[in-house]
Structure formats: structure tokens, C-alpha cells
Image (cartoon, rainbow, N blue to C red; front, side, top):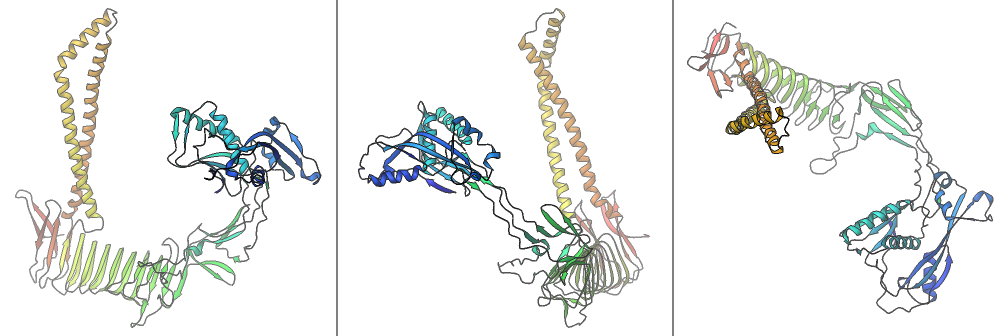
Length: 638
């Protein structure tokens, strides 16, 4: 905001006093400078009174020599309508008769530090009351404030009365505050709208927005450096997504500022008209303001030969920093990538690369610290021990890294980690598996398997394996248990508090029972004999009634709380109940040292069994001796 005037302080030197001068001018600020210069004084030492304001108008189409016509004061109000003010040939000016004189005595408003400013188009004028200003109420303060503000506006070469509609309300509110406080101090700047013209609507230049490219913008790594590995090799799109938007040019609307100047909107610039073509996989939607180019199918965006298209499948030799950088697309975009590199000494997905697509088929290996997020993943080679795969469906030939999904199939598990809903492993020679159901066709040694429902082995060829049944092995189960336990604890506390509160109210009722019965008899007597009942009696009777109602409400709430606790306990027990249906199955002979473990939630304990070597017992389950409250792992028929 530009400020045009501020509180002016006379200089320390003693100013010459001039005789009052009456002048007529269209520019009060300029006239004040002329008077100051001709009398060798500063403008800060001068003040003026507004004696008369004249408003003149004319139609510019009548020529520069056309006479301005003066308006009566009641006609000025009608000029505020936009129809006249937005007529480009309508011209307006004001002339002011003012009396200029030397400041000789303090003004009652001199302790108000005021400044007038405006927005860039001068269509809004603001009065700022500066921090530290004070003002004391006196008779006629409203008129004095209006006069002072008008003088500030004239010094800023703004018109008065014509655009002043907001000023009347602003001054009235300020005067009310001053009157309420008698003396008002301002501890921060305050701003009041004191004039408002007609704000023009800005012209809009045309623009072409490539929304799909915005996802290509390079981010920063953890050290604040530009991460060139994420340079947007592939840009995905989903159905109905706006890929490109063309903003049509539009000339703005005219306005008029608080100096009476007509504001002409500029012509729009047109430099971005679409010259490209699109295929039938992209829809063009046009209205008066813009053109949108929306995806009609999911996939990734291509631009070749000046034609935009959407494809779904891509064949590349490798994903590496040099060739592609990391590839990130929306998982719900229908994008499939086939990575063809098969050299066992090279990585098909390079070191540190991150891939996010709906489906990816990798013929070769994944490099160290690589990450893949997809709906479906197939790795034909092997995963590095520090690589990570996240997908609903995962198939890996040789797995050494980490794989997290729903359905995972591993041909050969070599000390890798697998976490899923259901896991099938053809051969395991070390590693960790966590799932709801685990199937291993050939089990070697040093494999830890933790399941919720079932672990089944086709052929056991090794030892030092762990078969663990744990209801909380799945992600989120431990958090669910913790939440459930917290809710049970809170429910029990709430029930105890409720019982105490009910007991308190019942004790009050019991203590006052005889008084209540006596009061009730008296009120019935008054009612039967048509005698007006004493107000104090009626009030006490209502209080007793409220006590009974409160107890009834609390008892209903207590029943609801107890029912809620019962359900919470059922949910808590349900987390463990299925453990008795869980099975560990070995379809071959046991050999070496292998351990079966069942983890109970309540009581929190682990029940173990080491099957005898060469044993033909194939199926194991958890057994509870309820009489002795003991648990054991036993062989069962299935």
C-alpha cells in the first residue's frame, strides 16, 4: 500500500505566520506547496479549511472543448451508480475553495497520528491510525474527524464526498468507541476504509498449463540437494485426470478510482494457443473460459510428433540413475513396465532406484537399496539383501531382500524376509517368513516361520528351524491389541466412576426420603384444597424429582458402559481364540533340532515343543488342560 500523507510536525525553528489566503484550486496539495514557497514557510506549518466543494461532469464524446457542468450536492450522490461511472466517455473533476493559514494553536485531534494510503489501483483509500495515538471525546468530534480525514484525502489528491460511502460508517464506529472510553489509546496500527471506487477486473492473458509435467519437478534429498534420480522418466495418468489446461485470454472490466480516473483494461496477450494434437485416449472439454484435456484411460503420457497420447505398457532395458532415474507413477494408473536386462552381473533395477507402478516384470536382478511399490511384481532374477519389494502379488525367483505383500510366491528363499497374508515358498534355505498362512515345499535349515493360522511343510530336509504360531504376527495386530487393552481399562474405570456417582445420588435420596414423602403429602393437600402452593415447596419437590431422574439416567448409561465392556472383552479374547484352530504341519519325517512355539496373549506365555527326530507325527496344535490351567503342544489327527 502506498501512503500519501503522514502526520506533519512543524520544524523546530519558529515559522513565520502568514495572513489567511483564500484560493480556488483543483489540486489542494499543489496549492499548499505554492503558498508555502511564496511565503517562505514549510507546508508542515500550514493548515486549511474547506470552504466549498464543486463537482463537475461532462461527456468526453462532445470534444475537449466541451464545457463541464456543475452538479448540485444532491446530484453527486447519484453519480455513485456503476452505470455512469463505467461509461468510458464520462469525465469528472472537482474544484475546491480553501482557506490556507498558519497553524497557531493545537488541534483537539492533534494527538491522532493519521496517514492516508491506497491500493495500487487507487480504488480503495484507507485511513491508518498509528500505534501510540490518543484521542479524547469532545462535542462535535464526529464532524471534526470527517473534516480532518477529508483534508488528508485532498492532500493525497483524492476526491471527497463522491466515493465516501464507507467513511460514514467507519467514523461513526470510531466515535462510538471514543465516547464509550472517553479517552481512547491505540496500542497498534488500525486501518479504516474511507473511500471506495470501482475495482477493475484484471485482464487474463492466455496460458497453457501442463499439469502432468508438474509431477516431474525435481525434489530435494535429505541434505537439501536436488535429487536428479527422481527426474520423471515416466508420467502416469488416471481416468478423468486433467493433463493439460489452456486458459483462454479475456479482457478485463473497466473501473474508476478515487481520483475519478477511468481505468481502462489492457488487451490480453495471446502467446500459448494449443498447436498440438491428441489421440482418442484424451478428451477435449471446452467452455468459455478454458479448454481441458482429460485422460480417458489410465496409463502414462507420451508426446511424440506433436501428438499427446496415453500408453499402458513400456519395455526398457534397465532402471538406473543414468538411463531413467527412479520411476514413480500412481498405483491406480494402468502402467506396466517390462525390464529386460538379464545379465547376472548387472542390475535390472539399479542401486538406490525407486519404482512405483501398477505392474512390473523384471527379467533380471534388483540392486542394493532399491525399492519397488506396485500392485503386482515379478522378479525373474534375484533380489539384493538390502532391496525392498511392496505389492499385493509378488513372485520372486531368488529372494534375499525384503518382500511385503498379500500373496507372495518365492521359488528360492535365501535368508530373505517375507511378510504377507499368504506365502508360498518352493525351497527355503534360511530366512524369515511372517504370514497368516505359510506353505513351504522343501524346507532347509535356519528358517523362522511365524503364522497366525497354519504352517505347512512338504519336505523337511534341514534343522534349526522355528515354527511359530502367533496371533499378533500380522502388521497392526499388536497396535490393535494395545488399543483394545487401553479401551478395556478405560471402560472399567468409567464403570467404577459411574457406580460411585449412582451410589452418591442414592445416598442423598435415602437421606432425604422421609422429607420428600412429607413434602409430597403437603403438596397433594394444597392441590386438593385449591390452595396456592408455596414456591419454596414446589422448588424443593422439583429438586427431588431431578435427583431421581439423574439416577435413572446414570443407571441407563451404566448399562450401556457394561455392554460395551462385554463387547471389548469378547474382541480381546477373539484375538487369541483362533490359536486353538491353528496348525503346524510337516508332511515328512522330522530330523535334527526343530522347534514349534505357540504364543498366547492371555496368559502371556510361550508354549514350545521340539518334535522327536524321525517322528512320524505330522500335525501339531495347542491343547488347554482347563482343569489344571495348563497349555501344551500336542500331535493331533488334523
